[in-house]
Amino acid sequence: MKTILVIGKSGQLAKELSDLGSEKINIICLGRKEIDILSIDSIIDSINKYSPMAVINASAFTQVDLAEEKVQDAYNLNAIAVGNLADACQQTGIHLTHISTDFVFDGEKSKPYVTSDKVNPIGVYGTSKAEGESLLAAKHDNFCIIRTSWVYSVYGNNFVKTILRLIRERNELNIVADQIGTPTSAKYLANACLYASVNNVKGTHHWTDLGIASWYDFAVAIQELAYENKIINRIIPIHPIDAKDYPTPAKRPHYSVLDKRSLKTTFNEVKNRHWRANLEAVIKELKKGEAKSE
Ligand SMILES: NC(=O)c1ccc[n+]([C@@H]2O[C@H](COP(=O)([O-])OP(=O)(O)OC[C@H]3O[C@@H](n4cnc5c(N)ncnc54)[C@H](OP(=O)(O)O)[C@@H]3O)[C@@H](O)[C@H]2O)c1
Image (cartoon, rainbow, N blue to C red; front, side):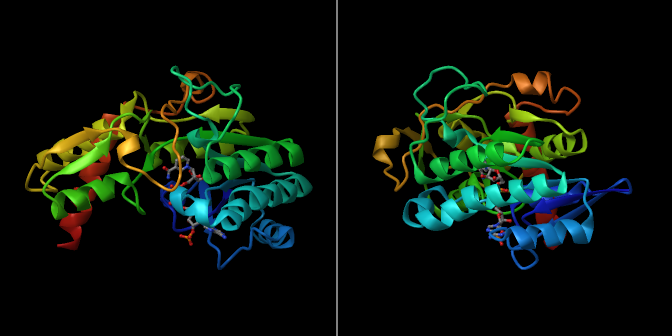
């Protein structure tokens, strides 16, 4: 039986990875109580304890606005810890899959970012993630970086759950329509990460759902699908607004669509679909969860 060690336990991606455990693959998820990724010794202890064939890093400081304030915390987790994981995996001869973000780019392009495009982050989160990518590449020679974007799942906190809550609480919503990217189901992302890990995929790749959207398009689709699936019982007006009219502590790229050619080449054996189909699947899962807890 193959063992894969996942760093992170309670996050969206870590939980989806945990669900992929089977008779053939043992997925062990370690949270901050079980492993200190700021210590190379702690990481090596875990590798010695579980003898995994590979490690997947699903942990990160993901709160983009809070990162502007907690700069050191973001840097510790998104950069220093990634360097430590790279060091430990290099010393033990183990493949490391690491997840990065569309926010390593500045958003000034108007066509999808390819993996070889120069990174130029515009906020602390993106800068710390870009630094993590560099440290990993400098310290390890058997790694895979998967950049992704706008991740959501039935697990954790994310845009889908926030919109559903706001539809219940408010009578109308204003949602940014001039930031364009691609929503990504953590379930399908988890499949890609596991594929990379088991198949020793190397280099930097992009993985998102298919298609593109603005946050406004995404919110409208969430409302439509949630209403159709009876998660909400009313439709409220959702208005498109400009990002300049919704100031946030962190600047965000205006356009961060990731080029999807890795999906056809490296990940051609891994299923993916248009973001709206994946969103509908998550909405149905949320509905099932509600029914179970009733
Ligand atoms: N979410 C997005 O929209 C998005 C977009 C692009 C890329 N990504 C990347 O995708 C990956 C997965 O994101 P996600 O959405 O699944 O993140 P998430 O739900 O915010 O989960 C982050 C995970 O990191 C863990 N963590 C935080 N500090 C830790 C520490 N010191 N030691 C061990 N674990 C720690 C968290 O554990 P606790 O719950 O205990 O804090 C949590 O399990 C990340 O690399 C992220 O940068 C995400």
